Length: 478
Image 1 (cartoon, one colour):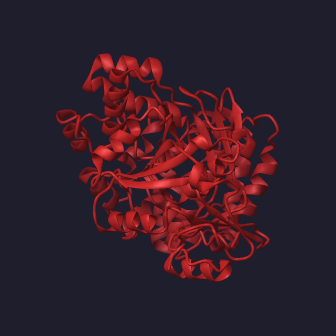
Image 2 (cartoon, helix red, strand yellow; image 1 turned 180 degrees about the horizontal axis):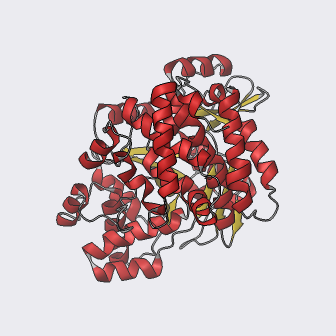
Image 3 (cartoon, one colour; image 1 turned 90 degrees about the vertical axis):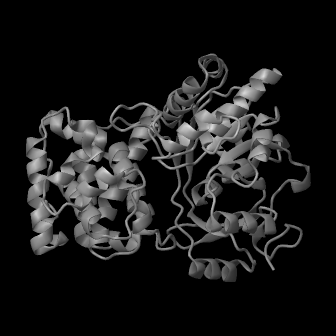
């Protein structure tokens, strides 16, 4: 028995406040992971009572047993799932989310995905495909046309397999049918995620058909957005715990912190849901909000997780309880980040710092360090670049940054469960090298290679030696 309807829910579980049967899809979302379900879907859920035309169709892009099992679970539950929001105090609230109205597995039903994307009722195509999912060549900063899957899509554009192929083929059909373009909205944790998405999709479109690309560029929009909510992986043990607490029988429950934020540029090609009623901040420019979140929360997340992985910690709250690791993260924020950061209206950097530390300490999240540390190469480039460049240009202390890099490189070399999806054979070879210098050639550090890195690199090498000879704790800057 699984969660199939919202007609009879246990006491204390919040049901959708709209008639689920009457809502209509207006959004297609690629990458139905936990963050999307606790963030974008959470916001959309709250405005369907005001405008029922913005329900969501989820799309999975990957084939295989795991993907098929996930699709079957969504179908079995009519795409309902429960979300438990838990504060650092331990107080929790459980609600059932109903805005996800179907789930399509693209490899099994490619034409169904294209039909849904081509339907003029679809006015937003959103995505959470990870920081590294936009196929941007790290060496050139441009869309990578040499990617095998992209090459195949360019050869057979009407039978796509990548998100770029699906979206551009659907836009071609819409143009030919006289329909409007849709908004392409990244909800990934990237600085200027809309700009990155624009580069990726237009890069593919130009390679396919220059005239089509011009139409897409003139008619589609790519709003930038800053997204924030800690949403950990849900193990079978956590599923059992969540269901016991809620009284539900849900195969797809998830847990998230009570904090959530979405700052979004109000740039939509064909309308949008009234998300401001759910707390979304619509602004002309998200830059300052992005900088604060990425340079403080995300940057300290990996500054904590890389050494914590080496020290054997499993969850972020456990790592933050280590006095040495906490002291290092706080010093990183206070000395390396805050002095070079501009706060947007209504935000104090010291208050934001305190919020970050409080959120990391929430034991109910049991936020897995390996999850946070994964795809470290992409995250280092996105989360640390500005802070590193500021330190190098201002010639300030680089010890904490060097420690973070040293811990990252030692993690690459020694932790077998660590995942770096953007690494190819050459990068894997550099990452696993036993010497102290080779890994510094990784593209992870390209964003500041134009500056004088002599002191930084020397410090990284020094701290890698300390980690190997005396352990991580001995390498933490005083």
